[in-house]
Length: 161
Image (tube, rainbow, N blue to C red):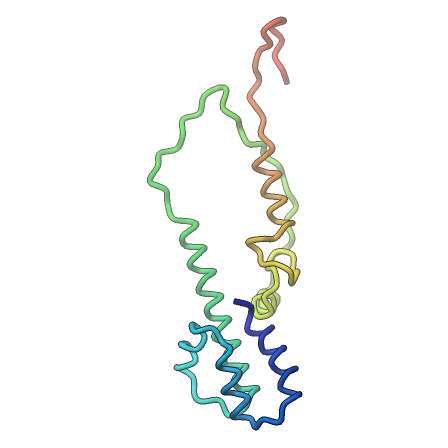
């Protein structure tokens, strides 16, 4: 379940140690691919070199990644049929915190990060955006910081600010 780019890099390193022709390398490369990539490769012409096989596989992997991202985005933003909760005086209210955001990625940077399976938020290679500790930390801060509306103290009648 690792990115094709990582698999291809490791495969090329191992290919240097064997004396196989291009067709044998292509066949062995394809055997190590995930079945969903193999299914997409049916739509491509037969590769004539290992480089062409890798290019095709990376293209399929990128398409699948984009498809998964689109599916997640559309499933996340489906309108809710629930009515909004009624708010009472004692319900916690989320604090409105202005947060400086990083500038949006250029299309070239976004494509580069997707191709190399880098986090779209911070650019690290150790995780994807879903597991980004920086983004998740900021999300936790905004959801954990709650405040209550002013209440009266029981003993002195002074409102808290």
